[in-house]
Length: 324
Ligand SMILES: [Zn+2]
Image (cartoon, rainbow, N blue to C red; front, side, top):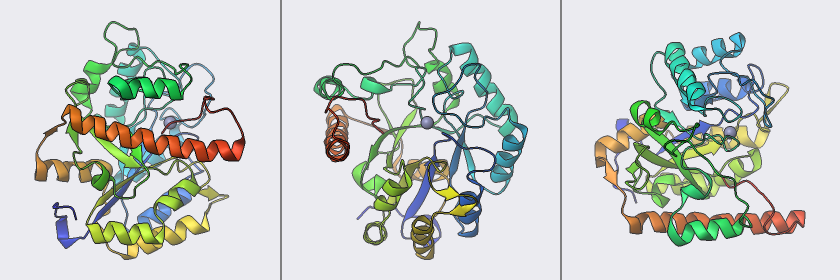
Protein backbone atom coordinates (compact mmCIF):
# COMPACT_ATOMS: atom_id res chain seq x y z
CA UNK A 1 0.00 0.00 0.00
CA UNK A 2 1.53 3.31 -0.96
CA UNK A 3 1.43 6.08 1.65
CA UNK A 4 0.83 8.70 -1.01
CA UNK A 5 -2.59 10.30 -1.03
CA UNK A 6 -4.15 11.37 -4.31
CA UNK A 7 -6.11 14.59 -4.88
CA UNK A 8 -9.91 14.66 -4.92
CA UNK A 9 -10.05 11.48 -2.84
CA UNK A 10 -8.92 9.37 -5.81
CA UNK A 11 -7.59 5.93 -4.98
CA UNK A 12 -4.82 5.60 -7.55
CA UNK A 13 -3.14 7.51 -10.36
CA UNK A 14 -2.67 6.53 -13.99
CA UNK A 15 -1.07 8.24 -16.96
CA UNK A 16 0.75 7.58 -20.22
CA UNK A 17 3.92 8.98 -21.80
CA UNK A 18 3.47 8.33 -25.53
CA UNK A 19 6.72 8.23 -27.52
CA UNK A 20 5.98 9.85 -30.86
CA UNK A 21 7.55 7.17 -33.13
CA UNK A 22 5.52 6.82 -36.38
CA UNK A 23 2.81 9.23 -35.18
CA UNK A 24 1.27 11.55 -37.77
CA UNK A 25 -1.49 14.16 -37.72
CA UNK A 26 -3.96 11.37 -38.54
CA UNK A 27 -2.92 7.98 -37.19
CA UNK A 28 -3.43 8.49 -33.42
CA UNK A 29 -6.37 10.90 -33.45
CA UNK A 30 -8.84 8.16 -32.51
CA UNK A 31 -6.77 7.14 -29.48
CA UNK A 32 -6.61 10.74 -28.21
CA UNK A 33 -10.31 11.34 -28.84
CA UNK A 34 -11.01 8.24 -26.76
CA UNK A 35 -8.71 9.35 -23.92
CA UNK A 36 -10.39 12.75 -23.89
CA UNK A 37 -13.87 11.19 -23.76
CA UNK A 38 -12.76 8.93 -20.91
CA UNK A 39 -11.60 11.93 -18.90
CA UNK A 40 -7.96 10.91 -19.13
CA UNK A 41 -5.26 13.51 -19.70
CA UNK A 42 -1.87 12.06 -20.58
CA UNK A 43 1.44 13.07 -22.19
CA UNK A 44 2.02 13.05 -25.94
CA UNK A 45 5.65 13.60 -26.92
CA UNK A 46 6.87 15.41 -30.05
CA UNK A 47 9.92 15.94 -32.23
CA UNK A 48 10.10 19.76 -32.50
CA UNK A 49 12.20 19.90 -35.70
CA UNK A 50 12.49 17.85 -38.87
CA UNK A 51 15.90 16.24 -39.36
CA UNK A 52 17.66 16.54 -42.74
CA UNK A 53 18.38 12.79 -43.04
CA UNK A 54 16.10 9.80 -43.62
CA UNK A 55 14.90 8.34 -40.30
CA UNK A 56 14.86 4.63 -39.45
CA UNK A 57 11.58 5.28 -37.65
CA UNK A 58 9.56 8.03 -39.36
CA UNK A 59 6.83 10.27 -38.00
CA UNK A 60 5.56 13.84 -38.25
CA UNK A 61 7.46 16.65 -36.53
CA UNK A 62 6.28 20.05 -35.31
CA UNK A 63 7.43 21.42 -38.68
CA UNK A 64 4.36 19.76 -40.23
CA UNK A 65 1.66 22.46 -39.84
CA UNK A 66 -1.34 20.12 -39.52
CA UNK A 67 0.44 18.00 -36.92
CA UNK A 68 1.61 21.04 -34.96
CA UNK A 69 -1.92 22.45 -34.94
CA UNK A 70 -3.31 19.15 -33.70
CA UNK A 71 -0.77 18.92 -30.84
CA UNK A 72 -1.69 22.49 -29.82
CA UNK A 73 -5.33 21.43 -29.75
CA UNK A 74 -4.35 18.54 -27.46
CA UNK A 75 -2.49 20.96 -25.21
CA UNK A 76 -5.58 23.21 -25.02
CA UNK A 77 -7.63 20.15 -24.07
CA UNK A 78 -5.36 19.53 -21.07
CA UNK A 79 -2.91 17.00 -22.47
CA UNK A 80 0.79 17.55 -21.79
CA UNK A 81 3.24 17.83 -24.67
CA UNK A 82 6.53 16.09 -23.87
CA UNK A 83 9.94 15.91 -25.55
CA UNK A 84 11.34 12.89 -27.45
CA UNK A 85 14.71 14.37 -28.48
CA UNK A 86 15.09 17.00 -31.18
CA UNK A 87 13.95 14.88 -34.11
CA UNK A 88 13.75 11.35 -35.57
CA UNK A 89 17.51 10.92 -35.85
CA UNK A 90 20.56 11.90 -33.81
CA UNK A 91 21.66 15.55 -34.00
CA UNK A 92 24.41 17.81 -32.69
CA UNK A 93 24.05 20.26 -29.82
CA UNK A 94 23.09 23.25 -32.02
CA UNK A 95 20.08 21.34 -33.37
CA UNK A 96 19.03 20.22 -29.90
CA UNK A 97 19.19 23.81 -28.71
CA UNK A 98 17.14 24.92 -31.72
CA UNK A 99 14.60 22.14 -31.03
CA UNK A 100 14.26 23.13 -27.35
CA UNK A 101 13.86 26.82 -28.33
CA UNK A 102 11.25 25.84 -30.90
CA UNK A 103 9.38 23.70 -28.38
CA UNK A 104 9.12 26.68 -26.01
CA UNK A 105 7.98 28.97 -28.83
CA UNK A 106 5.22 26.61 -29.87
CA UNK A 107 3.95 25.43 -26.47
CA UNK A 108 4.75 28.49 -24.35
CA UNK A 109 7.34 26.87 -22.05
CA UNK A 110 10.21 24.35 -22.23
CA UNK A 111 9.31 20.65 -22.03
CA UNK A 112 8.71 19.50 -18.45
CA UNK A 113 8.94 15.76 -19.17
CA UNK A 114 11.17 13.98 -21.66
CA UNK A 115 12.04 10.48 -22.81
CA UNK A 116 14.94 9.43 -25.02
CA UNK A 117 14.30 8.26 -28.56
CA UNK A 118 16.39 5.08 -28.56
CA UNK A 119 17.51 5.61 -32.16
CA UNK A 120 19.32 8.91 -31.43
CA UNK A 121 22.95 9.09 -30.36
CA UNK A 122 22.14 12.41 -28.65
CA UNK A 123 20.06 10.40 -26.14
CA UNK A 124 21.08 11.25 -22.58
CA UNK A 125 22.48 8.58 -20.19
CA UNK A 126 21.23 5.91 -22.58
CA UNK A 127 22.42 2.40 -23.52
CA UNK A 128 24.98 1.08 -21.06
CA UNK A 129 25.06 4.52 -19.36
CA UNK A 130 21.63 3.71 -17.88
CA UNK A 131 23.39 1.31 -15.52
CA UNK A 132 26.40 1.33 -13.22
CA UNK A 133 29.18 -1.02 -12.10
CA UNK A 134 28.56 -4.74 -12.45
CA UNK A 135 25.07 -4.14 -13.88
CA UNK A 136 26.57 -2.10 -16.73
CA UNK A 137 28.88 -4.99 -17.49
CA UNK A 138 25.93 -7.41 -17.44
CA UNK A 139 24.07 -5.13 -19.86
CA UNK A 140 27.04 -5.03 -22.22
CA UNK A 141 27.28 -8.82 -22.07
CA UNK A 142 23.54 -9.14 -22.85
CA UNK A 143 24.18 -7.09 -25.97
CA UNK A 144 27.17 -9.18 -27.00
CA UNK A 145 29.47 -6.24 -26.16
CA UNK A 146 28.13 -4.53 -29.26
CA UNK A 147 25.81 -2.01 -27.60
CA UNK A 148 25.58 1.44 -29.16
CA UNK A 149 27.00 4.47 -27.41
CA UNK A 150 25.04 7.62 -26.63
CA UNK A 151 26.45 11.09 -26.08
CA UNK A 152 23.82 13.54 -24.78
CA UNK A 153 25.50 13.57 -21.34
CA UNK A 154 29.14 13.43 -22.53
CA UNK A 155 30.72 16.85 -21.94
CA UNK A 156 32.86 18.02 -24.85
CA UNK A 157 31.11 15.78 -27.37
CA UNK A 158 29.41 17.55 -30.31
CA UNK A 159 26.09 15.96 -29.26
CA UNK A 160 26.31 17.06 -25.59
CA UNK A 161 23.21 18.87 -24.25
CA UNK A 162 23.32 17.91 -20.55
CA UNK A 163 23.47 21.54 -19.41
CA UNK A 164 20.40 22.39 -21.52
CA UNK A 165 18.59 19.38 -20.07
CA UNK A 166 19.38 20.54 -16.54
CA UNK A 167 18.30 24.12 -17.27
CA UNK A 168 15.09 23.32 -19.10
CA UNK A 169 13.74 19.81 -18.44
CA UNK A 170 12.41 18.66 -15.05
CA UNK A 171 11.76 14.94 -15.57
CA UNK A 172 13.41 12.27 -17.74
CA UNK A 173 12.35 8.63 -18.09
CA UNK A 174 14.77 5.81 -17.45
CA UNK A 175 13.68 2.30 -16.41
CA UNK A 176 10.56 0.60 -17.74
CA UNK A 177 9.17 -2.26 -15.64
CA UNK A 178 6.57 -4.95 -16.26
CA UNK A 179 4.49 -4.02 -13.19
CA UNK A 180 1.42 -1.80 -13.61
CA UNK A 181 2.29 -0.07 -10.30
CA UNK A 182 5.27 2.03 -11.37
CA UNK A 183 5.41 3.72 -7.96
CA UNK A 184 5.35 0.32 -6.25
CA UNK A 185 8.43 -0.89 -8.12
CA UNK A 186 10.16 2.52 -8.03
CA UNK A 187 8.98 4.21 -4.80
CA UNK A 188 11.88 6.68 -5.06
CA UNK A 189 10.46 8.48 -8.10
CA UNK A 190 10.88 11.25 -8.96
CA UNK A 191 14.50 10.95 -7.85
CA UNK A 192 17.78 12.71 -8.46
CA UNK A 193 20.79 10.54 -9.21
CA UNK A 194 24.07 12.23 -8.23
CA UNK A 195 25.97 9.94 -10.60
CA UNK A 196 23.88 11.34 -13.50
CA UNK A 197 23.87 15.04 -12.60
CA UNK A 198 22.61 16.51 -15.89
CA UNK A 199 19.12 15.13 -15.25
CA UNK A 200 17.16 16.92 -12.55
CA UNK A 201 14.76 14.11 -11.74
CA UNK A 202 14.16 10.64 -13.12
CA UNK A 203 10.94 8.69 -13.42
CA UNK A 204 10.17 5.09 -14.28
CA UNK A 205 7.39 3.63 -16.41
CA UNK A 206 5.37 0.49 -17.11
CA UNK A 207 5.91 -1.66 -20.21
CA UNK A 208 3.55 -0.95 -23.10
CA UNK A 209 5.72 -0.50 -26.20
CA UNK A 210 3.20 -2.32 -28.40
CA UNK A 211 -0.56 -2.73 -28.12
CA UNK A 212 -0.20 -6.35 -26.93
CA UNK A 213 2.39 -5.45 -24.29
CA UNK A 214 0.28 -2.48 -23.17
CA UNK A 215 -2.85 -4.63 -22.80
CA UNK A 216 -0.91 -7.29 -20.87
CA UNK A 217 0.33 -4.66 -18.41
CA UNK A 218 -3.13 -3.16 -17.78
CA UNK A 219 -5.04 -6.46 -17.68
CA UNK A 220 -8.18 -6.62 -15.51
CA UNK A 221 -6.27 -8.26 -12.65
CA UNK A 222 -3.47 -5.69 -12.85
CA UNK A 223 -5.95 -2.78 -12.79
CA UNK A 224 -7.60 -4.18 -9.66
CA UNK A 225 -4.18 -4.51 -8.06
CA UNK A 226 -3.24 -0.91 -8.90
CA UNK A 227 -6.47 0.32 -7.32
CA UNK A 228 -6.05 -1.86 -4.24
CA UNK A 229 -2.47 -0.70 -3.66
CA UNK A 230 -3.31 2.97 -4.21
CA UNK A 231 -0.39 3.07 -6.61
CA UNK A 232 0.59 5.07 -9.66
CA UNK A 233 1.11 3.87 -13.20
CA UNK A 234 3.00 5.75 -15.92
CA UNK A 235 2.63 3.75 -19.12
CA UNK A 236 5.45 3.78 -21.67
CA UNK A 237 4.03 3.41 -25.16
CA UNK A 238 3.95 4.22 -28.86
CA UNK A 239 0.30 4.87 -29.70
CA UNK A 240 1.17 4.89 -33.40
CA UNK A 241 2.20 1.24 -33.23
CA UNK A 242 -1.00 -0.76 -33.58
CA UNK A 243 -3.44 0.99 -31.22
CA UNK A 244 -5.58 2.33 -34.06
CA UNK A 245 -6.41 1.23 -37.58
CA UNK A 246 -8.33 3.34 -40.08
CA UNK A 247 -9.57 5.56 -37.27
CA UNK A 248 -10.80 2.60 -35.20
CA UNK A 249 -9.25 2.10 -31.77
CA UNK A 250 -8.11 -1.49 -31.17
CA UNK A 251 -11.03 -3.20 -29.33
CA UNK A 252 -9.15 -4.89 -26.48
CA UNK A 253 -7.24 -1.67 -25.73
CA UNK A 254 -10.50 0.31 -25.72
CA UNK A 255 -12.22 -2.18 -23.45
CA UNK A 256 -9.39 -2.13 -20.92
CA UNK A 257 -9.12 1.67 -20.93
CA UNK A 258 -12.89 2.02 -20.45
CA UNK A 259 -12.75 -0.39 -17.52
CA UNK A 260 -9.86 1.54 -15.98
CA UNK A 261 -11.57 4.91 -16.50
CA UNK A 262 -14.68 3.63 -14.71
CA UNK A 263 -12.60 3.09 -11.55
CA UNK A 264 -12.24 6.85 -11.21
CA UNK A 265 -8.49 7.16 -10.69
CA UNK A 266 -6.50 10.38 -10.89
CA UNK A 267 -5.94 10.63 -14.65
CA UNK A 268 -3.52 13.52 -15.12
CA UNK A 269 -0.46 14.07 -17.35
CA UNK A 270 2.94 12.63 -16.41
CA UNK A 271 4.33 15.93 -15.06
CA UNK A 272 1.24 16.68 -12.98
CA UNK A 273 1.50 13.23 -11.41
CA UNK A 274 5.25 13.60 -10.74
CA UNK A 275 4.81 17.15 -9.38
CA UNK A 276 2.29 15.74 -6.91
CA UNK A 277 4.74 13.04 -5.77
CA UNK A 278 7.48 15.66 -5.48
CA UNK A 279 5.24 17.87 -3.33
CA UNK A 280 4.36 14.96 -1.04
CA UNK A 281 7.76 13.31 -0.72
CA UNK A 282 10.28 16.02 -1.52
CA UNK A 283 13.24 15.65 -3.85
CA UNK A 284 14.63 12.18 -3.24
CA UNK A 285 18.37 11.62 -3.74
CA UNK A 286 18.71 8.00 -4.74
CA UNK A 287 21.34 5.97 -2.88
CA UNK A 288 23.73 3.63 -4.72
CA UNK A 289 22.00 0.64 -3.08
CA UNK A 290 18.52 1.79 -4.16
CA UNK A 291 19.75 2.37 -7.68
CA UNK A 292 21.51 -1.01 -7.89
CA UNK A 293 18.25 -2.66 -6.84
CA UNK A 294 16.27 -0.87 -9.58
CA UNK A 295 18.94 -1.85 -12.11
CA UNK A 296 18.83 -5.51 -11.02
CA UNK A 297 15.03 -5.67 -11.24
CA UNK A 298 15.13 -4.05 -14.68
CA UNK A 299 17.86 -6.39 -15.98
CA UNK A 300 16.07 -9.44 -14.59
CA UNK A 301 12.83 -8.44 -16.32
CA UNK A 302 14.68 -7.66 -19.58
CA UNK A 303 16.31 -11.09 -19.56
CA UNK A 304 12.94 -12.79 -19.04
CA UNK A 305 11.27 -10.71 -21.78
CA UNK A 306 14.16 -11.31 -24.14
CA UNK A 307 14.21 -15.05 -23.52
CA UNK A 308 10.49 -15.22 -24.31
CA UNK A 309 11.01 -13.23 -27.51
CA UNK A 310 13.98 -15.37 -28.52
CA UNK A 311 12.13 -18.61 -27.96
CA UNK A 312 9.43 -17.30 -30.31
CA UNK A 313 11.84 -15.91 -32.92
CA UNK A 314 14.62 -18.52 -32.64
CA UNK A 315 17.41 -15.95 -32.90
CA UNK A 316 20.76 -15.89 -31.07
CA UNK A 317 20.70 -14.52 -27.53
CA UNK A 318 23.04 -11.64 -28.20
CA UNK A 319 21.27 -10.33 -31.30
CA UNK A 320 20.03 -6.78 -30.99
CA UNK A 321 16.56 -6.45 -29.53
CA UNK A 322 15.29 -3.20 -28.12
CA UNK A 323 15.57 -2.69 -24.39
CA UNK A 324 12.81 -0.33 -23.31
ZN1 LIG B 1 11.16 6.73 -29.84
